[in-house]
Image 1: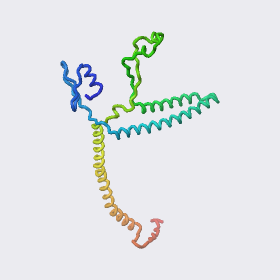
Image 2 (image 1 turned 30 degrees about the vertical axis):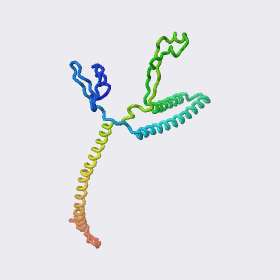
Image 3 (image 1 turned 90 degrees about the vertical axis):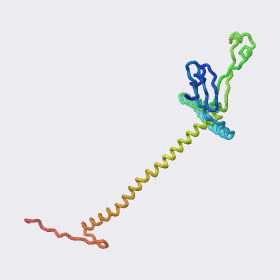
Image 4 (image 1 turned 45 degrees about the vertical axis):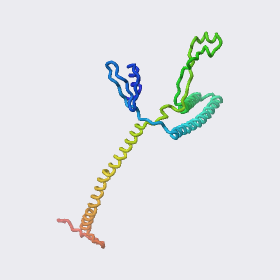
Amino acid sequence: MALDLKFFRKAKKANRAIEITDTEAVIPAVRDAAEIRVPLPNRRIKTIEERSEAIEARREQIATLEEEIEMQRKKLLDLVKTYRAVGTGIAEIVVQNTKIKEIIERRTALLYPEIWIEELKGLTLKDVFESKRDTRKIGKNVAVYQVKHRVEPIRSLYVDVGAAAGVAAVAAETAAATAVAAPVATAPVATAVAAVAAVAPVATAAEAATAAAAKGAIIGKKLAIKIKKTPAAGL
């Protein structure tokens, strides 16, 4: 079991407080159920430089999206002008609006990676509206909620050292396997090339001898042999 939602659900079901050690999270034993131990993730806090680099990268992405939004809005204005002048092209306008909406959602996700709603304790809508008419319609003791944003998510403040080490180990094993496989794959090729090179001179000499015997060729000279036609027997 990992330190995830299921673990905390089990702790809630057991109605026991989770004990945290240096390396583990523990749900104490209860009734017939044994205790549950889960290793804590190996994480470290990001340095100021790492956080600054991440924020700067997000700013560049946001700037790129804002430029794209402006460009798509200009296209939308052109489509609207065309529609007003000609009366056609409403489908293109709808498609362009949808495209702009998707880009804006991507920009919002980069601006505010975490968005949640939180109740404001001690404040009700009755405290906000003074008119009895308004409070009569809204109701009594209705809670007030506020939308909150977090520019830097909690998960972005830490580095999972265990996962990083695992990725590095896999990369090292892949590189080592590639380095070992390369000479092994090259050896048969080199052997084959050497064998061909050794056989080639022999084959070439044999071919030359056969050609010389067949054509009556002498090295360094050209010899043409004329064959006298012999009449067939009985003619």
